[in-house]
Length: 180
Image 1 (cartoon, rainbow, N blue to C red):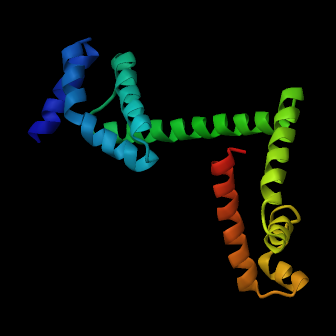
Image 2: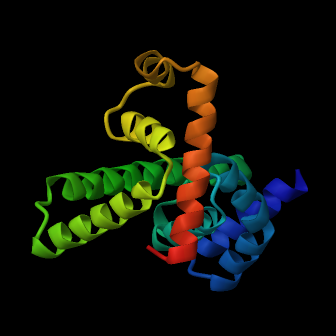
Image 3: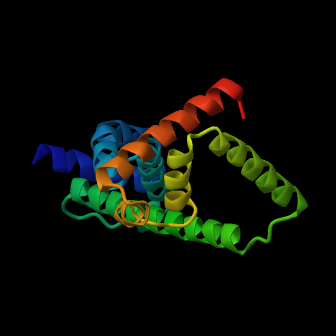
């Protein structure tokens, strides 16, 4: 009961423009609100930003704040709403970025880099033993499953799986060794 009265007193001071009251409220609830925001977002940086934004809005709209009963509930609800808004905004930004990436036509530089990468990859693949090379190409370039490759090459699925694992390890080793 005393805490609620103290909180309501702090709000009344904040409404009058007392920055020390806001600071006191911030210190009192910051950690618990950050933990709650982290629970909602799973990101420390974002949770701290959300809580800071909640307190900034309280200060900016201090004259209009209407907390009559439980300030703690009010703060947690404000944090929840702010977190949801941040996540919606972040999702929209990511969608816009992915649209930009998909819609962007490759320029001459991109085409050159792609051709260079393709050439390096071809050089690496040519180092593989013939059977391993065939399995790798059928899987990665033609899109065949291990079972389909096994049927095509008259091998067991397990052999195909083992050869793919060895091919990937060998390609990584070759790439590191020759920096291709």
